[in-house]
Amino acid sequence: MISATCGPFIVDPSLRVFPDGSQEGYWGERYRMVAYDGGAYQEAVYLPYAGIHELAELDRSHFPSADWFDFSTLRQQCQVVRREFAVIFGTPGDLDFINGISRLRGMEQVLMDMADDGAGVYGDSGGALQFLL
Image (cartoon, rainbow, N blue to C red):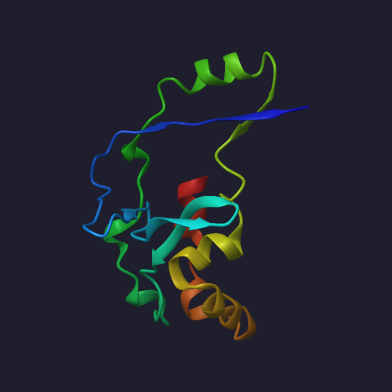
């Protein structure tokens, strides 16, 4: 069966576009379109939590909030999609811990955190998980 995604629309206009063309993500990370031989996609170009080693160092002022989104059409979206497709809420990367966090800290740092037990930073991994749930 083919699937289709449904989700809320972002209504908070605070996500910025910077002079270099990069766009801010929900957690303060930035993405820019990067071209490759096979096409182009958004790649993280600013990692706001790179170099953070203690949970207390996180700047929680840019954590996303459910208030940023309009959920009013979600039921209708799902009803339309389910006629022909399996319904998926979100994206395949939403619960992808390693890649999701690497867009904030960098892949090498995330792998080092895992090797070092990273408890100082991930002791409250509920920030991302709470938002997603």
